[in-house]
Length: 198
Image 1 (cartoon, helix red, strand yellow):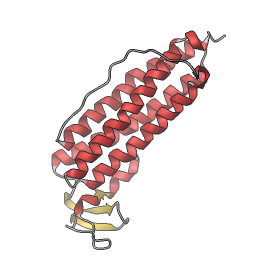
Image 2 (tube, rainbow, N blue to C red; image 1 turned 135 degrees about the vertical axis):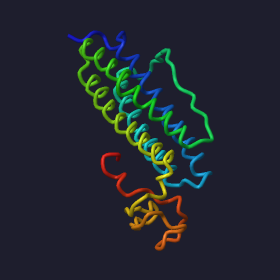
Image 3 (tube, rainbow, N blue to C red; image 1 turned 90 degrees about the vertical axis):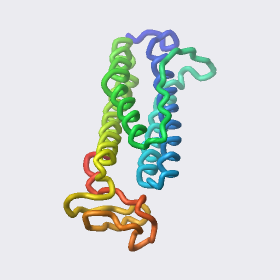
Image 4 (cartoon, rainbow, N blue to C red; image 1 turned 90 degrees about the horizontal axis):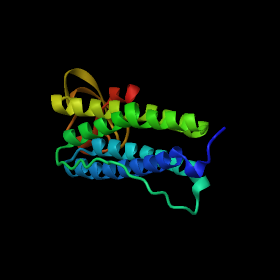
C-alpha cells in the first residue's frame, strides 16, 4: 500500500524534476539565442524544439503534483550553469545533463516511487528518462558534426534540408542561400539527422 503522498519522497522528487525540466527549458532557450546570433538558425531551432519537449516534461511532473495543490514543497537540488559563446560547448553540456537525467536521476526517482507505491509516477520517471536519452544523442550528434566541420559540408554528396521551407538540396556542401525560399545557409541541416535523433 502506498504511503501518504504528502509525506513521500516521490512528492519531493516530482518537484525536483519539475524544477530541473523548467530550468532545462530556459537553458535551451538561452542557448538557442546564442546559436541564432551566430547564424546557426537550424541549431537554434533544435534547441527550441527540445526546450518545448522539456516544457512538456515539466507539465507532466506538475500534473502529478496536483494532489499537493495549495501547498509549498521545499526541496534542495543541484542544477547546472552552462554559459558559453561556443555553440558546440553548449551542445556538449546539454548532452551531459540529459545523460545524467537518463542514467542516474530519473531511474533513481522511478525506483523510489515504485517502492513507495506510486506506480504512475514511477512510470513517468522511467518514460521521460528514455526521452532524455534521445535528447542526449541528438545533442551529441550535432556537437560531433560541428566539431568535425561536417554540419554544412561533407566529403561526399548527401541531402541537406532547409528547415524554413523543407527544400532538400543534394551536394557536398549547403548553398549560401536556399534556392527555394532564399533563406541563408544557417537554416540547413543534414537531412539524415531526422533518423533516430528526433
